[in-house]
Amino acid sequence: MNIARDIAERPGATTAPSSQMIDPFGRAITYLRISVTDRCDFRCVYCMAEDMTFLPKRDLLTLEELDRLATAFVDKGVKKLRLTGGEPLVRRNIMHLIRSLSRHLGTGALEELTITTNGSQLERFASELADCGVKRINVSLDTLDEVKFKAITRWGDLAKVMAGIRAAQKAGIKIKLNAVALKGFNDGEIPEMLRWAHGEGMDLTLIETMPLGEIDGDRTDQYLPLSAVRAGLSERFTLADIPYKTGGPARYVEVEETGGRLGFITPLTHNFCESCNRVRLTCTGTLYMCLGQEDAADLRTPLRASESNELLSNAIDEAIGRKPKGHDFIIDRETRKPAVSRHMSVTGG
Ligand code: SAM
Ligand code: SF4
Image (cartoon, rainbow, N blue to C red):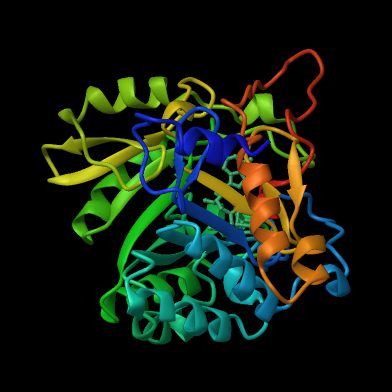
């Protein structure tokens, strides 16, 4: 039984054409995130252990296969594609894939093609990204302090990221900064980051740490609820809730003093699953229907089994038909085990 199609075709369903992917809870899947590599040139402490074992290169889908998979999703109603990782810009020849995928912007099938990056390689790629129709990107930045930046990323260089941000802005790309809120690390710095980001015309989104993958430290020490951050900021800034949405799970406020937007992504203190419109594909062709659940579908086998897309399309429908209602993240003081064993760099943030 194909639940997704069944629901889509039910008389009176409030859904769009049957070419769209509709999950069992009536949510249209219009957003695909692809982790194009699990590798990275940083080792952020909340994301990776310092000594990571990465996938053997032979297990990765080729760029052509990633293109075919992404295109199958676009044909089935995906309007927004985000490349992430690991660090997407360290995958060899990544611009070939981005340039190729940009054809779907040209036809109007795709509304947005974008990336989430640590910014380390952005100076090199900014103008080419803009040329491929990339209009806005997310750059992850947890601190403005060079020494702290080195400490949190282990291998990163803040000056390079800043040069990347400037290059992207010069190329006309809008930037949203993502910062993971970490207790005792950047909590005191958030007002300064907010003023700086807004002063430079960038939105800022704060993210709570999520219990994904084994890391070297203890996450219960890092966890900082954004409800507490917001309460602290409210003493210094006037925050007004606004209905602004970027197709993601962030809730936004406008900061009266700076005139900029501040987003909160709160997977642990607020359940954002009701409006989930996304699925995630790994660089080996595994589709995760939820960031916070282990269930996944193998798309590599149907992709490689035939040159036509029929098997693949059926496998996608079957997977969407299993998309769960939501996650149940918990940072557990008793077991101290991650809720999900894979790292964020596998499924992409
Ligand atoms: N390397 C790119 C980057 O850092 O932007 C893309 C991949 S990274 C996994 C995507 C986002 O996930 C980053 O903003 C990062 O801070 C965030 N992230 C990684 N591990 C996380 C965790 N355990 N909890 C919350 N956010 C996490
Ligand atoms: Fe790399 Fe991004 Fe993970 Fe940092 S958060 S280690 S930059 S994948």
